[in-house]
Amino acid sequence: ENLIDISDEILIERKAHLGKGMSLQYKKPLHIVRGLDQYLMDFSGRKYLDTVNNVAHVGHENFEVVKAGQKQMAVLNTNTRYLHENIHILAKELLETLPKELSVLHFVNSGSEANELALRMVKTVTNSQEIIASEIGYHGNTNATVNISSYKFDGKGGKGTPKNTHIFPIPNSFRGKYRGKNTAKNYANEVQLLIDNIHQQNKKVGGFIIEPIISCGGQVELPEGFLEKVYQKIKKAGGLCISDEVQTGIGRMGKTFWGFQLHNVIPDIVTIGKPLGNGHPIAAVACTKEVAEKFANGMEFFNTFGGNPVSCAIATQVLQTVKNNNLQKNAFKVGDYLKQELLTLSKEFPIIGNVRGQGLFLGFELVNKELQPLPKQTDYLINRMKGFGILMSSDGPDNNVIKIKPPIIFSKKDAQEAIFYLKLVFKESFMNLTKI
Ligand code: PMP
Image 1 (cartoon, rainbow, N blue to C red):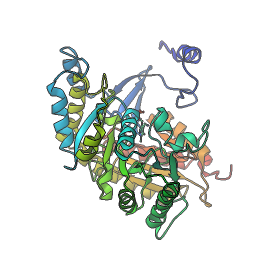
Image 2: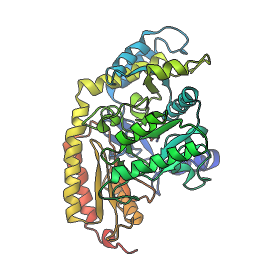
Image 3: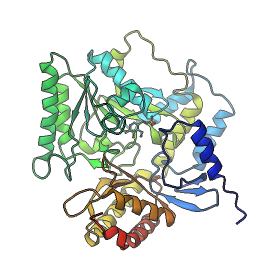
Image 4: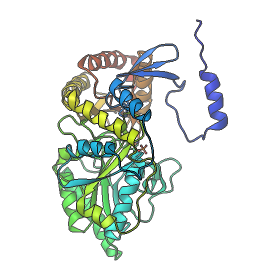
């Protein structure tokens, strides 16, 4: 009872001086003061198991990553107009994980900046600004990236599809426009319609962007064969394919290091963000030599912070930690175990209509018998889990998908703990009121 809780004071400050659009989670938001591995701790010392944070990829405040940053910070940090070995050590480490076709890198500071640069590349290389993207996709907070993010312009406060953006229905085979047989083909045909439409306007296709598993759209796995078909169509039309790996990259998928590798395709451009710095702002764009050559048309690309010695030291350590500690394999093993346990749970509790995802990038959806979304139950579940010391979060257009994307050091024991408490909550009466 001697604890000093300053949450209310912080909230007052926030209300007075921060923009209203910056949202917080939970009705009574948490005041987190420390991170450690797969845990976050609040001011009272209460420990929470974090099943949500895909930025703290190798664990909150990972000792080696923190040390790498501190060490370089004490020696030199400067803008990127000088030669420095750190950027090349990082480039080598990153390129080792990518197919040989993707051989050129640009470093930036956030996922939004990475996608912004990818769009600039598309525009310069193809001479077209026409972008094809998925319904309920999210690619960043800048003007140009919001303009390709249906999650934003079709959501609250949005003003609908901008003129150079072309949106196809989210390829969700559980509750989407097409289900069952021929799903991949049907969704790919929707993309073809957009290509035809662009041509009918006497315009050229610029680029196609998608996440290998659509995160904000509700952890939606692309139907098998969809991406391969679409890449062929886009390439035939002279467009460039961008894989947004801001959430899915760096081993999280388990089976593969990058999300696009699940789909047997090679993008022209890959954007990399969140996990690369484990919380430190660094992001990257990988592209083919051809794209890089055409992009360098004489206009300089300068980025004050992107690829500075400190950021590079940190990102290098993140990649080495993933490699040295076999964390991709851990994501595969623990993710698979957790997915199986969730599937078992869904047999017992049919309110779990669908379990999906790869590695430690999973989702499960709460619906009633008619497959209508149950956002209230989802919210209840998340808040009850918080009470048990487990942080969870929801997403999707109907806010009824629980997304699971913890630091990839998440263990089998952590998965068991989450399942144990989920089971308790699913038995509670509120979870069985599916008509409220
Ligand atoms: N792409 C995807 C798929 C994302 O999820 C996000 C962030 N949620 C971004 C891009 C933008 O990244 P940032 O917030 O680092 O600018």
